[in-house]
Amino acid sequence: MTERDQERGDGRDPIDEEAAWAEIVAGYGEEPADPPGVWPLGVPLTADDLPGTAVDVPPAQGPRDWEAAEDEDEGHFVPPEPPPLPAADLATKLAWIAVLGGPLLLILTVLLQRQMTWWIVTLGVGGFLGGFATLVTRMRDGRDDDWADPGSGAVV
Image: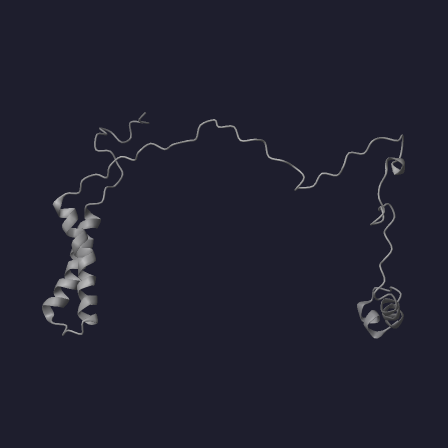
């Protein structure tokens, strides 16, 4: 037993590593033998090779051996026209102009290499913050306003 086997204490017979490596090297490049019960590759299978009575063996079907059924025109789905977007009021339009226009004003000032004066900064930053706050406060909360008692049950 080797020192490693003794340290493990499993009591198994030591493996002759040199003999195992010699067997692996000697068999390098050879096709391994098929395990029992496996039909050898390259040998055609006939009905006489099957156990039992001789039967007709259907040809093997693979993933590419099928044909699609002819398309029957059952009518294609045509989605309905979407409803028009709701009209925005003046406050919402101005809020969007401020949210988009404020940073755009600051970017254009930098790109055109103009002096960043106090009123440009005030319009850019203030416009963005004011427009954003306006849009957030005007958001709908998803609740219907016509509910009399929210705890009264399901609405169908």
